[in-house]
Each structure stands twice: as structure tokens, then as C-alpha cells.
Length: 496
Ligand code: SF4
Ligand code: SF4
Image 1 (cartoon, rainbow, N blue to C red):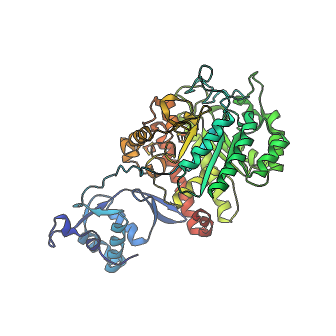
Image 2 (tube, rainbow, N blue to C red):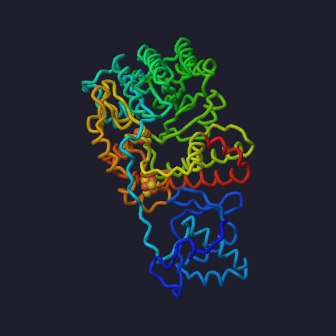
Image 3 (cartoon, protein in one colour):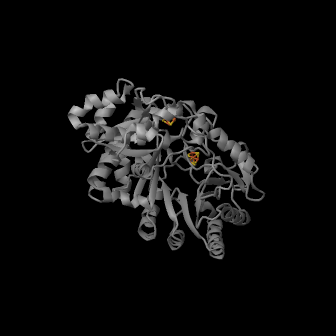
């Protein structure tokens, strides 16, 4: 801890007080949590994790009941810790803004927009809006779809030419970044395999000419995997995510063919073949959780231990309120309990330096370690864009093809004005409830697509799951704190 007093750090006289005025201190914005028998603070404005020693815990406890003068704090705590230690703690807590002078101006929450020329980091190409499955809950085809692809004039399959234009657009918009990320999405991506092959080859060629690198990823339902496709994925080091909902009875509940037949028996041998033959990148599974399939540990262990995925990530189904498969109230509590159970398992593995594979907790502790503080919930419309089959550029893949959410076209360029209007409107500072929420550095109001489906407005916060988000973030902070104390080396992987 650094030496000094709160008066040194903040300059009380500069705030209008005279040297004779008492200096009153109060708590600022933080979220306390316990891990490995220690107390930590998650400091909201800076998104930093701060370890509290005993005098600092005592200072914060003393301020629990309201603002107190610095002299009274020192008088009360010096007999236990000695005056120098109390003053050091006060100075440090002021420095990190866990406490502050009551006379200081109220902390404001800046609405800072990105610089005009910020680069595109990830482009998601919807190579087709067709799918050979008919998953009941699908946001593209189900009851909550944004674009009706049956009457949309856009082609069902992206042409080779539009895909090439998209690659050019991606490199143009990636500015000086050395690596561009190209993600293929659908519909079912492998229905347009020919265009995938050509696009990857073209992107590689252009990357060499430009002296850049390109990283590829693809999402598939697994039903169209065959050896030729798998070998191509492996040769091109394409990161694959398979959408799958778990063991047979869960997968077959909603992930069905158009005739209603479940897809598990058909997809599983192909997925196993993928896991056997594609060894150049780890393969992940992505699970959509519904009210009827809510058994996170069982799904996780089936997919990791019995099928062989490297990692498994879960997301509750995106749905308007009241759908039969929507997770609601008690379901969120159940899901939280299940996530917590797996997070404990993850922690035990991390302490032993072993890979676990529950990607929800890993992704969040990575963000905590990096001190991520989001002005926007995700990269949509910022560093990430989705391209529809006709080349229209949207906020992200889930909005691809929606005129209301278009921010340009790969054929005519990006509409920067529209993009900035969107960002200005969607900044977390505009979301009143989020402004006082300690989880905002990591949540920032949640997915725009979910807000659109649930409330009909991308700009509102997803207030239906705040309790869940805050509880889950607290769990991840506890896991982070435990790892930081018991095996700090594990966290080094997040420093690159
Ligand atoms: S949506 Fe809820 S949990 Fe997320 S930042 Fe806003 S208030 Fe907090
Ligand atoms: S808007 Fe939602 S679906 Fe789109 S990138 Fe953001 S979090 Fe993902």
C-alpha cells in the first residue's frame, strides 16, 4: 500500500474546505466479496479487484453506517492497528476510490463514445439463412424471428461474389490490426460448403497480400459433417463450435428435423468423427438451455466426458416472455444453482492447474482479470458486425438481414452515421438502472437481441435477469479470488 493520507490524495482544500474543516469520508461504489478466507472489493468504476487487509476491512465497516470524519476513524481504529496503518489504509482506499471525500463532486459516469476510426475485429458472415433442422426455439426461424426469410428478398445462400466482397470489407475495416477474425454462421453453415471453401482460400490470399493474418471460426449443428469437410476444417485450422443441447432426450426435445425427428442419433457419430479427426483447434459445444432441458451438470458431463468436447458453453434460450420453453423466475434460480455447482468444480480444477471446460466461468474470470469495463454489452456494431446473405451489414449475426438494424453493406460501405447513432443510443450510461448497478462493467445491460425479442427495443436493459447476472458475477468473482490466492499462476494465461 502506498504512503500518504486521504488529504494528500484528494486535496481537500481544493474542494473548498479549509485546513481546519473536518474531512468526512464515505463509501463509494464497490461490491465486496469473500474468497479463500479473505475479503476483496470489486471496484465498480475501474473494474479492478482489490484485496483488503484487516485495517481496510475495519475502515469500511466503520463507514457502513454513514460518512465519518477522518479524525474519528483514526481515533477509533488506531488502538487496534496503530495510527500509521490506519492512515495508510485510508490513503489507499481513497486512491482506488473505494471511499471518498463527501465534499468531493459526485462521481459521474462518462458517456464516452469510441474514436471515429475504430477497427473491426470480428466479422460474422451468415453464409446461408437456410437450415436443415427446425429447432423449435430458433431465433431465426422460431416464433421470435426478426426477419421472415420466407418473404425476404435476400438470397437464401450467400454468393461467392458477396463473400469475396465481405472479405475485402473486413480487411478494409480492420485498420491496422494484424489479425482479422472471420466467423461463419447460418442457418446451417455447411449447407453452403462450396462458398465456405472459396471464401477461406480467398481470405488467406488477401491476408498474405496485406501482410495480415486471418483467424477462422464456424458454427454448425453437426449434421452435415463428413470426412472431406472435417479434413478441410482441420487443414485450415478453423475453430468449430457445435450447437448441441446435451444427451439424446434433451437434444431431441427441440433440435429436430423438419419432420419432427430428433437429430441426436444422426448428428452424434458425425460429431465424434469431427472430434477424432480435427485436432488443430479445440472444439467447443454451445448449449441452449430451456425450461424443459435445465440440467447443466448433466449436459456438461455428457458433452465433455462422454462425447469429448474441449469446452462447453451455455446460454438460456432467447425468447419473448411466456413461451413454453422460456426459463422464468424459479428456473433462473435453478440454473444459478447448477452453474454454481459447475463453477466449484472448475475452481478445483484450476487450483490443480487442470483444464475444466466450463466456458461460462472461464470467459468471465478472463474479463475480471483483464479489468474489462464495458460501455456496451458486446461488440455488436462496434468491433463486431454481421453480414447477411445479400451483403447487408448488421449489428451482429442475429440481426443480419433486418433493415431496421442495418448499418451499411459490403457493396456500398459502412454507414458510419447510423453506426454512431446506434452507439450513442445504446451506451450503458443511457440505461438508468444500470448506472447504479455494481455488475455493469461486465453486463452493461445485456444482449441487444434479447432486449429486442423481449421488450421490442434493443436500447433497453435486460432487467428480467439482473438478479441472476449479479449472483452469477458474484460467483465468478469468488472463483477468481480463490484462484488468485491459491494458484495465481493459472491466471497468467489471460495476460496475452
Ligand atoms: S441489466 Fe441489470 S445486471 Fe445488467 S448492468 Fe443493468 S442493472 Fe445491472
Ligand atoms: S447483440 Fe447479443 S447476439 Fe449479438 S453479439 Fe451482442 S450479445 Fe451476441
